[in-house]
Amino acid sequence: MTISMFLDPVRPWRVLIAGAGAIGCTLAARLAAAGHTVDLLARGRTLQTLREQGLVLDDLDGRWHSPVRAIAHVDERQNEHGNEPAPDLVLLCSKSQDLPALAEQVQPCLGPGTLIVPLVNGVPFWFFHGAGGRFDGQTVQAVDPQGRLAQALPLDQVLGAVVFVTAESTGAGRVRSRTPHLLMLGEPAGGLSPRLQALCEMFAQAGIEARPQERLRDTLWTKLIANLTSNPLSVVTRATLQAIYSDPVLLETVRAVMHETMLVASAYGARLSIDPIEFLQLGAGMGAVRTSMLQDFERDRPLELAAIGDAVVELAERYALPMPATRTLLSQTRWHAARRAERRLAEPATA
Ligand SMILES: NC(=O)C1=CN([C@@H]2O[C@H](COP(=O)(O)OP(=O)(O)OC[C@H]3O[C@@H](n4cnc5c(N)ncnc54)[C@H](OP(=O)(O)O)[C@@H]3O)[C@@H](O)[C@H]2O)C=CC1
Ligand SMILES: CC(C)(CO)C(=O)C(=O)O
Image (tube, rainbow, N blue to C red; front, side, top):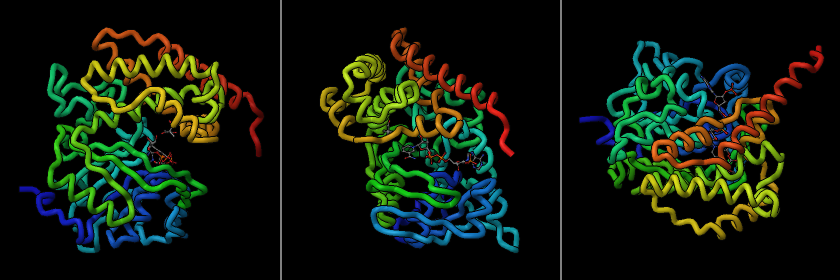
């Protein structure tokens, strides 16, 4: 019997949040404010600022100064007697390429009842876990090339998430979120389990709407279509969502990538509820939003192309589906990222 069988949404949970960026800090602030015990695994200047000044979130409900404990290693969770129960919940909140290292960092403190939720864009590493069908249990190479994630995390304790929270860091330990907090959560094997319901309720009590999904992969494909049609193209063009989804020239690429991705989704049995025309209208209605990938590009940070792009191409290859427009777009995005890196290297160093 595992601890999670007793998870009670109203008692305080022991939560470990790994990754103190925009999403990790937003969730940490709201969960701590709701009375949960929150440890936030951070590094560098963020860790130092969190220790010295604490965490501040500005969201639609106001300003939150929340009592989180910033830690550099999970063994700092131990008290003076050298013991600390395993967390009830671990949220992994990094860019997808950083997930293996983060998973290995949290692995030593996991207990048999710890729920683990990666909050990461793109095809998840657990995609084939509990999926049934001919690929059941296989690995998505693009997101877990050395099998480090599957090794570090007990898959039966992993719940999937599709992130609709939007947030941006405004400085170390400072975060701003201007939309209602929304997560879609689901069991990799599908269905509505008691632990999934308890987790959704626990988030809801902290002001984070969490919708339990019987078929999370359907929602995942919808988000992938949004990411794949807009994130790489935003790097190539520097355009906002409004421009990407309304400019007639850019719409040609958007439509081509959307149709290719929808075909892959249907090959995997996804039941998509999106109407393509409505989808484009919704995208255009998002306004002057710069995608997370464009923001990473402008900050000279690595791009999440493996999880958002390469992984979908890999899934397509399993069914011999060509993705010519998507492949071209991904190559062009990489070309722009490489040119930018070269220009940065050529710039004279500032004192
Ligand atoms: N922000 C948003 O609005 C949305 C984000 N998402 C997705 O959610 C995920 C998280 O995004 P977001 O929070 O914005 O990303 P950020 O880049 O803001 O945050 C990631 C954090 O993880 C930290 N980190 C990475 N590796 C380690 C490590 N080994 N040890 C300690 N800390 C580590 C980073 O530290 P450092 O800064 O030192 O690198 C950074 O603070 C991504 O997949 C993103 O695409 C999805 C929807 C919306
Ligand atoms: C806003 C959106 C949906 C654009 O694809 C996104 O998730 C991102 O910027 O990463």
